[in-house]
Length: 230
Image 1 (cartoon, rainbow, N blue to C red):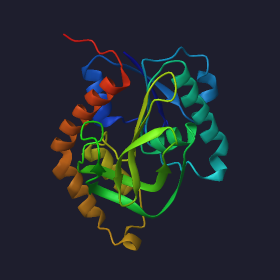
Image 2 (image 1 turned 90 degrees about the vertical axis):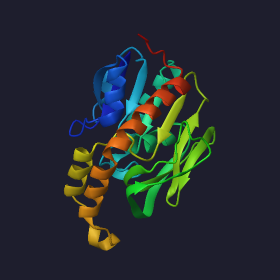
Image 3 (image 1 turned 180 degrees about the vertical axis):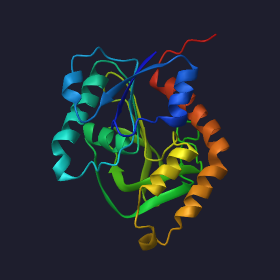
Image 4 (image 1 turned 45 degrees about the vertical axis):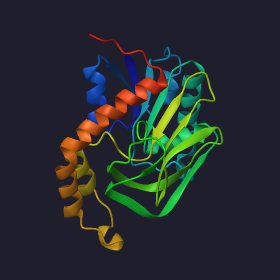
């Protein structure tokens, strides 16, 4: 299984999601989201994985970067490559399929449960949250999960291949989450203790790994990605 990973070159960690994909035989090719044009002639992968980012999909200064990635997503789906998106990747996918995204009134941080209509493709969690933005699902999509902040998961079957997107972070390890926390937020402004966020990451790590692996398996089945079995 060849997985193309669209990511910032400064943060390529697919965490528990990549770990599970690797366990079932995936090989990875990194696709720099800041230079997608040079990857346009690549053959379609078995799976396109859109990781998170410190970027903001609604930032007008990033219009060219966001448009480039939305074109890339649409081309992959039309070529028969299913797409899986996480956080910023979910926001870009929403935009690619006719939805949008915008800045939330306040960030969603820490391990939070989600309201769901599908415990397989969007289990209630708790899941790691670390974002300021909210996506609006495409009109062709089905929203499977929500939180107080907005939609948390959607699936879409409007093109040649299927897509699934999560606003939360199933992939994140405790070390990566601790790094994100250390890299900065105005935590006092949100009445959030960054030390508590790191404690949550350590406390939930084992359960998060199990949940992420199960979620990957469920998503691959939904996306109809062939998986070799022993």
